[in-house]
Structure formats: C-alpha cells, structure tokens
Length: 288
Length: 208
Image 1 (cartoon, each protein chain N blue to C red):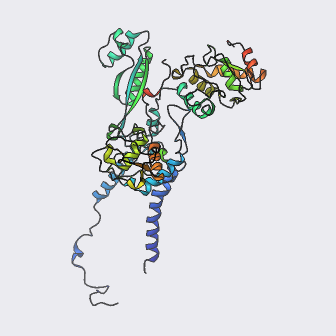
Image 2: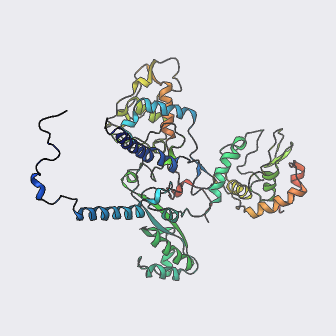
Image 3: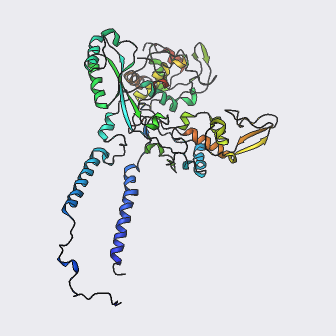
C-alpha cells in the first residue's frame, strides 16, 4: 500500500475528532453533574433519586421498548415573564402613574389596588419586566416576577419546564427516547399519580383511553380465580375495565416495578438552568 | 504494469494546455470566509459557550442568571423541606407524632407560644425525661429528642417557621428569624449545654 501511513493518519484524525466531539466534550461539559438545589426552595435537593422498585421498573421500561414510542424530554421554546402586582402600597396614585406611563391601561389610584395579586404586564421579556418591576417598587408597590415557559410541549401539559441533563443523573440507562407515537412521559408521575390507572393502562390501554394505539402488556399480569376475598394487589375497576366474572387480574412484579417507575417520573422542579415559577397553589405559606 | 493506454511522461501537450488552469474562483473562497464568520457570530450569540447551565431557549450564562427571579427566599417552603429530612421520622409527615411516644406538633401549646424562645431551645439542645405536659396531657415517654444544634441558624429558623405557621396543622404562630435563633444559641451554649428536661424547660420564661 503506497499511501499506508497517510490513510492511517487520515482515519486516525477522523476518528479522534469525532471521539472528541461526541465523547470527550459532553464528558467535560456534563460529566461532573451532582445533585443540586431547587432554585426556589433552596433547602430542597434535586433529583432525589428513584426508590428501589422504580429503579427495577426502569429495566422493565427498557426491556419492553417503551422508549420506541415514548420520549422523556420536554422541549421549551421560550420563557416569558409576567409582572404581578401584589401590593399597591400606600401611594397607589404613584403606582397608577407608573402603569399609565408605561401604557399598560388607564388606572386611577383606587383601581390599582383592586383584585390583587394581578398581572399588570404579561408575556414580557426579562429586561422590560425588571425595568417595570423596579419602577413599581420605587413607587411603593409590591411586585413579583413570574416565569412562564412556552412551547408546544408545555401547552400540551407535558411539563412546566424543559428537560435538562440534571433530570437523568441517577439513571444508569437514560431513556430520553426520540419517537412520539405516544405522549411524552417526562412528567407522567405528576399527571397520573394513580397507580391503579397506570396498571390498568398497561393491562388494557383502550380501557382508560379509547383511541390509544398502545399495545396491551397483558403478559405482565396474571389472571387468577377469585378466592374467598379479592387480593389487595388486584386491579380495581376504572374506565371501562372490569375484571372478568369470578377472576381477578394481578400485576406481576415487573408490572408493579414499571408502574412504580412511571409514577416516579417527575421533572417539574425549578432549577438554576431551567428557572420556573412554581404554581402558587402548592403552598400554604401564611400570606404576607 | 504497462498498459498500452498509459502515456509516456513526455507525450504531446494536452488539448486544454492553452486554457488557463481552472483554479478555485476567488469569490468561492471569499464566500467560505463570510459563511465562517457568520457562523462564528451566530455561535457567539446563541451557543452559550458550551456552558453546562445554558440550555436553549437561553443563549448565554448571563441570561440564565437574569431569569433567577424565584421571589427571594421562602423560609416556610425551606422549612417544609428541612422538616421532611429531619423531623418526619418521629413527628410524622403530618406533624401528629405518635401517641404515647412522640408529641404531636399540630395545635401543640409549645409550638403556638407567642414567643418562640422555648421551642428554639427545644430544637437546639434536645429534650429528655418524662413528664412534659403537651396541651395539658403529660407525656411519660422514655424517648428523648436529639439536639439539632448541628443545623444552621437559618435552617432552624425555617423549620420552626414552618411548624409554627402551618395552618394545615392548625398552628398560627408568628415566623422566626435566624437572629432569634442565633441569640438563643449563644445563651444556651454557656448556660445550658445539655438537653432540657421538663422542669428546666418550664422554668424558662415563655417571653425569653
């Protein structure tokens, strides 16, 4: 071979360049990620790690090829900021003036304080939101900025923020998926907290969702003659699912693990790299 | 391998010898540089410089930092997280404790005192010995409460704020600041380094 060393060199360069791009760079970039804190509630750590049964469920998820039809990555197109007025303060005339000057409607002194907290500016970018908030604060008002994620996935209710690498750090095999024959599962544990729903849906998807094209995973369940009393693990009727007369349907350990994994899927925690204002309904903090 | 087609080195001049050598046109080179330049500009503005904390739709570390508007610290929610890590083992996730062993925090007179001094002491130094009266009922338990002085002032203030202000548990007492915890920590470190027992705790003035 006349150009042996040259061919070798070219192949070596091509392979090492792609190794640097696909292996080394991500490793340098993300390889040292550790648990981080919730960006709003600083004492809360994220991710908490999956319970043991849910970890086994990840293997069942992988073995049954769930990732061929389900992704676990929420896309976010943008972040908009709402400026909330929480307190009109003592000088509501000045607050009204700030709002009128910014052409956000025509307010008079008393009408500013009606129906608080209310959004005075919706869907703004971070710069104009902070400028308005600073002006309102100077006029004596109480303000709060709320971040609202946007994008088709967010609209579908698949999550409140985009998926980031941090969401996967405790999973030995990550299952981000790329196909979306079925819905995204990054937050399915939040949307469907009912374990019985998950199990019945695996047993017969059409029972809880008529139009579901998902195949049935009956082999993860056992049909058993009803004894004297129903087993506590047996599937309970939900949707159009009713156990056959004289029988009960019991989940095998695989089905239990898979359901535990699905209910552990939740990535709505606000993080530094994916900031978010959690919905206010979850807190019972005393009003300020 | 000598094929008859192969031309000798000094053969007749090729037919296109008179045509100028077709070099790469200069405009193509310029175009390449322009595209490279535009690509670099785009990367600079949107790439986030490979920062692990910059994901789309954000374009730079400074922008991500600008979006940290999480409403400032929220001691109540911090307290909920600390309670979940520290206190649930004995007092339970709903704060109702365990009858006969661990007193309930929901509606407890010790929790709802106007001044938090005695509760801060309890959390800081721990507690042991039978006979503590909670809501008039004596707790004759052998279980002791371990001292939590390893927690920071902020953490203790947050967890006490959470317990005292938790309306779900029927508690309506005022929040606690880290300064209050700090003051009492300094006091008890000298005066009372060991766990409190019921008589000692009741001897402390509720207003202190």
